[in-house]
Length: 238
Ligand code: ZN
Ligand code: FE
Image (cartoon, rainbow, N blue to C red):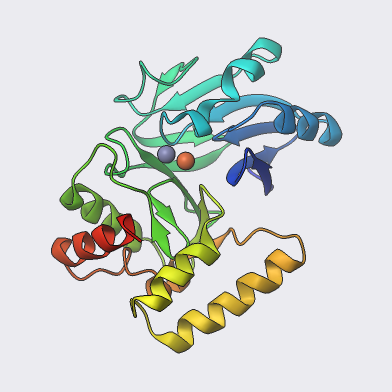
């Protein structure tokens, strides 16, 4: 069973996550190899799995370097199998990780192969670049309708689910939300203060929760695909 989740910072503003069980470690989205290697050595952990949310370089860039030093299973979607370096297993539906159930949610829109890893017992979801705090990924490959459907899939998770998102974009996203009146001002301001306090203490704003995002994230709580598309277009040119 997974004992803890650790947050590593990679590249400029990427989050890489470590899931740890009995000296073994699964890494979600290794944007770089070096910080992961340093972490594994410091914690005395053996890398066994790399879980990729999607094929973008800032999420898979560390994989080849890690595979040179350690053998590991590399998970991704069937769609991404040919474009994720070192992929060994196309995952869907349910998979086991260290005795814990992982639900693989297909959440296309940012890319067409994007998946989220949901761990019910840990009340944790890893959506990659589908969902950020107070934001969502750009539509590089998918349509607003696809992304809206992905938002609905995520917001159906229990509200206390922790959201371990892909990038530290939170304050910038909150500026967009506030200036466009995309969420209740008091909610946005209170959340911004809590995020600023974390950052000032050297902590990440990840994880958020589905409950928090439903209050401050106009992409996650959009009533319709049209409303989602409206906010996404505004955000593109912001
Ligand atoms: Zn991406
Ligand atoms: Fe990214």
